Image (tube, rainbow, N blue to C red):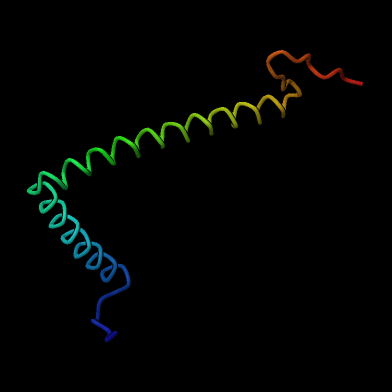
Length: 84
C-alpha cells in the first residue's frame, strides 16, 4: 500500500471514517428492507438474551471466586467445609 503522507493516527482516523460510512450505508439498506429489519430485530433479541445469560453466569462465577477467596464457599444443601 503506498504511503499517503498521513501520520499513523491520521491514517487510522481516515480508515475508521471510511469503515463507518460503509456501516451506515449497510444500516440504511437494512432499515429499508422489512424482511432484513425483522430478522435483525429477532436476532438482536436472541443476542441480548444470550449476553444476559453469560453476564449472569459471570456474576455467579465472580461471587463464587470471592466467596472462595474468603474461605466461605458453600453449596445449597451442603455443610461448609470444616477448617482443620
